[in-house]
Structures are given as structure tokens and as C-alpha cells.
Length: 323
Length: 209
Image 1 (cartoon, rainbow over the protein chains, first blue to last red):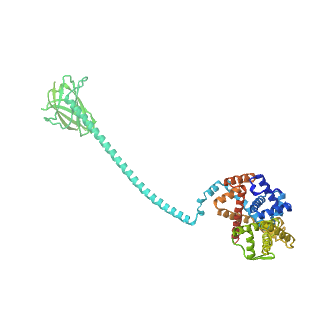
Image 2: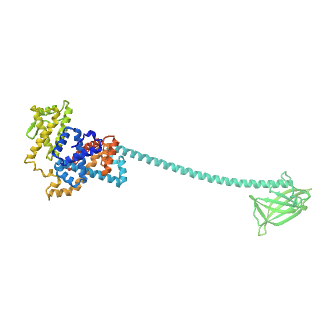
Image 3: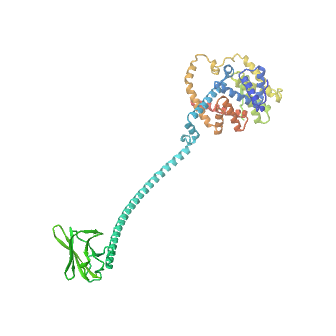
């Protein structure tokens, strides 16, 4: 029998031969002489005894898995399996193989379960009691903090909503202010326009092409004051365009009478229409320049309704100088 | 290491003094001698087991008692041949066992499954309960495996992964990964199996209670 030392088990072929020899021994397949040599060896050599145990484990596993050949299975059951201890070991091997197989199948079939196993520390029921209690307290405190934080955020949201509403109101007021300022600007622009026209009329520069002199008359001009306007009629002026402004009254038509200050009427016209201009109205009338001479005049503006009733609206003083 | 006191197995009594003499012959260091004693006893149990003797441990203890008595009687046995002397006594015990009139009257529970009497009503009940028993065993094994240190559990589960050639290759890689010869790995696994087996027996006992 060529049985080599365990120390030479680096030789796999020899190791396999040794294992096979021990398997034959365990199955009672060796001669009496071969058996005795092995028995003497493992009783005196602990290392060899351990090798026998590992071979025995392997043999039991192969039987438990049903992988033994027919003849060896019979030898195993008829010889090896006589002692209750060995039967118990086979029972263990069958259970262990079933356990490993089920565990392996379970891991393959359900990766999620495997994942749970990998992260088994997350399974609450596996935690020690002290850790569970600590975890519960942490969750409780965390929950309380979240509730408090939610309430705080809700309050802050309400404040933000109020601020937003106030801002919207402020914006509305600003819009109104802007609109008022715009209207005020238009008024100022209109006034500026009137002032410019008045100034133009004072300078009495008629349009060179048409020979029409534009003259602006505002209410409230008083005779003999510095504010009284003077119409300077140049030789090329053929017509004077009078723009008579007034603030109050709304009539169907208007009439203009121009008189000298001593009451002599020099020109009149009725059936005139008023135009809106800024906050007030204007009646425009074109008067031949020839009717004027160098002296003071009074323009009387009257309003007429459909009932033929008439009302004096205002008188306007101005002077004329003919060049 | 603690050892039994008076032992009465077979035809002779083994008292503490005789047992101490036996240990003294096995080595001057008590611990080393104890380890050697345990190894010889395990080897003898294995011997009787492999020879198909039931119960093997009783015959092993009978062998030890006989050797110890011879040593107490100052028989001339050389230290280097002590193991062979144990083996020689064991062979005698074995042959006596073969001639024993009681040796074929094995209890039915000690017989392998195929030698059980046909139509055993107990077996029928056992088959019915087999499934439940297996589930109990698996639950116990799960608990036992979980009780192992993680690295140990990983190692033994890896050791049993795969089938046939794949399993052999897997074990070779495992041994390489651990930096140990294959035989060392097998011995490690054997020891873990022993622990698991003991754990399983205890667990099943608790379950039955």
C-alpha cells in the first residue's frame, strides 16, 4: 500500500489517492493488512487522524447528497452506517446540505431578500433591546422636532403671505400714484402748451406761409393789468386765430362777440363748437385781421342750449397793436 | 484538563491512581499527556466504529482500562511502542466483541435505515413527521449558523457552495484566499461542523422540551 505522509499533501494527485484509500477503509473495502496499517497510523498520528475525519466528512456529505455510486452506497449503508453516532452524523449532514441549498436558492431567487440579508443590521428585530429603545427615543425626538419645525414654517409662510399682500397693496397704491402723476404731468404739459401758445401770441409771429396769427385767451385776464395780453398784428397777418379757453359750463353751441372797451361791437360769430383740451374746453374762432386796429378789446363768450337760452360764460380783455 | 475519576467499564475498574499512571506514561507535561490521551481515545473510538462495533466508545474505554491496568502492574511497555500497544489491545477487545453472544442483538434504533424492520409503525409516524422535523432542524441550523462569528460563517457557507467540479474549484480558491493548504481548510471546516452538530443537538433538545 503506497500511503504517503500528510506533509506531502501539496501533491494533489497523491492527496486524492490518500483520500481514496481512506474512503475504502471507511467503507470496509480494504484487506485486513491494509486496515491495520491505517489504524495503527491514525492512532499514533494526530495529523493523520484529522485527515481521516475530513475524509469521513466528505464521504458523509456525498452520501447525504445522494451522489454515491450504487455499490458504494450499499457499502456505506451496510458497513459505515452501523453505528448510531454515524447515523446521527449523516442526519446532520443531510440537514446541513438542505440548509445551505435552501439558503443559496433563497439568495438566488430573491435578490431583495439577499439584499435584506446583506443589510441585516437594518432589521429592527435583530437589534439589541438597548439599541431598540435608543432608536425609538431618537425617532420620537425626531418626530417632535419635525412637528415643531412644521409649525414654525407654517407660521413663517403666513407671515410671508401677509407681507406679499401688503406689497401688492403698496404696488396698487404706487400704480395709483403713478397714474395721478401721469395725469398731473399731462396737465402740466397742457398748461405748458397753453403758456407756449400765449407766449407765441405775445410775440405775435404769424405763420409765414398762411399769414394766420394764433392768439390764446384765458379767463380771468383783467383790463389794465400787466397780465392783459396784447395782440400785435403784423402787416402780413391776414387772420387772427383766437383760442378762447374756459373751465365751466357745457353747452350745445357757443357765441363770440368782440367789442371795443367803449362798447362798439366790431365782430361776432355764433354756432361755434367747443373742444376739450386738458381739464377745460376751448372755442376756436378765426377773425379777419382787418377788423382790429390799435386799441383795447373785450371778447364776450356766451353759451347756448337747445332751448335758445344763453348764458355769458366769461369776458376776455386783450389789446391789439397794428403795425 | 479535567478527567474522570473512577471508571467502571468492562471487567476492570479504573481508579484515579491507575489513571494518573497512564497519563504519566503518556507524557511528563500533564496538559500534553491529556491531549495525547484524548487523541488515543478518539482514535480507538474511530477504530471500533470503523470495525462496525456498537457502542464504539464503550469498547474504546475498555481498551484504555486494560492498557492502564497493565501499566499499573508495571508491565514492560516501551514509550515508543505505546500507541502500538493500545492498538494491539484494541484488536483483542475487538475479537472478543466478535465472539460475544450479545453483539448481534443491536437495538433497532442503532440499525441503519435499510435494516429497520419492514412495516414498522413507528417509521410510518416518523415519515409523517419528517417534514416538520426537517423544518425544525433547518430553523435550528439557521440559529446555529448565525451564532458563529461572521467570518467563520462566511467561510463554511462558501465551503459548501456549488456542485461537483465547481465546488472543488471554489474550495481551492477559498484555501488560497485564506492562505492555508487545502487540508488545513478541511480540518477547520470539520471543527466548525462539530460545533454546528453540537449546537443542533442542543437546539433540538430544547425544541423537544
